[in-house]
Image (cartoon, rainbow, N blue to C red; front, top):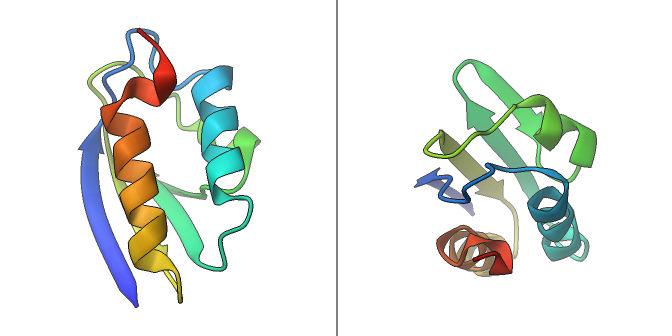
Length: 89
């Protein structure tokens, strides 16, 4: 199953090392292929370096694509993580 969602980065410092690490941990057990697309760049969301290379700042929009057996659960977790700012205040 393939699911696509668009989200806004609401962290005041954007996606820096701490949120990127949280994404990697969240996707660690995923069987799905997960990508993030920002502007014209699409990267593997399971790679911290790739996420960091996107340079996601506050209010950036990204498209999340999850393709695989556990796509629904993984997308739910990712959307929740972005909504709760990865636990940052």
